[in-house]
Image (tube, rainbow, N blue to C red; front, side, top):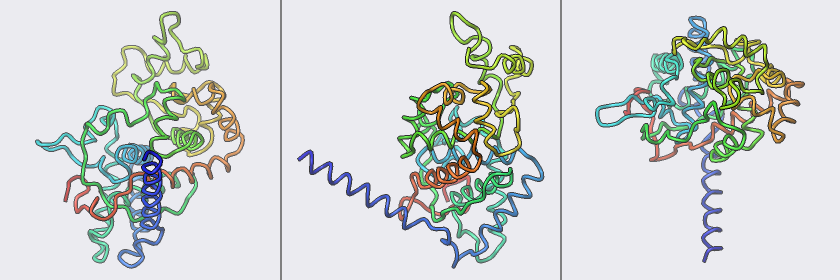
Length: 326
């Protein structure tokens, strides 16, 4: 009986994966909104010209969306009196408003085109916008798979334990990514998104002021970098102050993130542990020395991430308002 149940489970997973693969395709909107990618890119470009924060904010929003109930734009739903939504969970409160605004502006641009109005899901808009901000920051441009529906549920409770934490080690990260069908190497590749963006000083206090009972400073942190971090993040700093994730090329999507890890300049424990752990170190070294290999691994991992928890049929809809269930 157990063997039979296991076989049924495998068949179910096989059918689910193939259903998603059939649903997602690069030309999904060819008949309904053929210019969808250009319209979204133009809106994203305009937003990036207004503020660079658009780039890391959109990229981070995509990760936080896909890791909780799949890539379905549920992170964009606003809380109501009857429901505390994902975006109001403590792990999501630091998501920058520019990420949300990027999707909203792109949605408005699509709705201004008669044949595209309410034809493109917010989940797909976020997927396209994420690809575009990576490319606009100097990263690779790749074909996105489209055809996602928007999720019908968004609760703060569903976020708990689903998102990586700054203090996570490789064991925790590997386990968390595996729950989304992502491998060790895919986790290392997606961590490379930290080549862009910011983090609040309070997220690194433990590494530079109170690491453990015997030492104030995490010994894996480069000493000069500790001095730099303490200058930028004194103990009494305003908790809203943020610093660059990548201290070397903070506005460029590149493989310098991995070079930083080799030098002990990973901002979070979850970053630096990729270099100190023997399982991930060879991949860090490889990508630190070969930008093309990293770019290809990142693209492949992003495409695979985009397949997580895709909503189809009655499990989703196309929202008229990305921030509400309608």
